[in-house]
Image 1: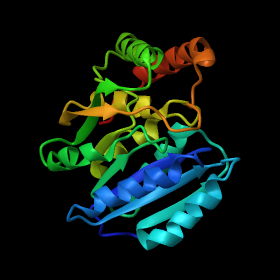
Image 2: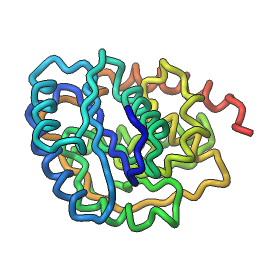
Image 3: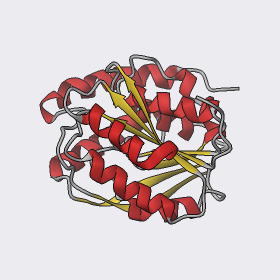
Image 4: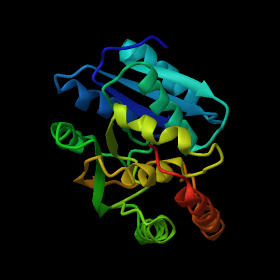
Length: 243
């Protein structure tokens, strides 16, 4: 990919979201177009097995160069995010924002995040209202507690997909995330939280219920994945800080 003088790269990992992806991309393009900024939307197809690849190729044709597509073998949500973050660094974007492709990330709150970009280096959406059920809310609570106990990091919501980051801060962390870390965005939140010079902010958001597809971690796998994450966080917590 060529280097860019654009302000913002939106990174959207996509996996088996044929029922939602057209709706999601269309509403985000409409919202981003309201603001006087230069932006690109990068759709990373993580080895989808349904009609998603065809749908996102059609979206790229419809919206032109602002909507770009990468197809890859399945690597998992977190590693797909890291690929997008690295693309933002390599292409010289000033900011990178990650959102999910399942319709939960409401674009109405983007303007508030963007307006605070000069005040903070990292801004997370804080899910003050959630439509995805109490079990998902409980899973987020357990994750936050686990992160605090295993790493000491104070993260408001370490796995929230709605996050805007100054691209220049990412090299402090992303190369220190192991390739097998299955929730790489959690690792990124922890490592950035441990960088005392960074300014962290939040914006309250409404997190909608997903439209089709399935979560990357199903509730039936929760206990196994929690144990795996606990081990990985322990290793991450022991890692040396960047100098």
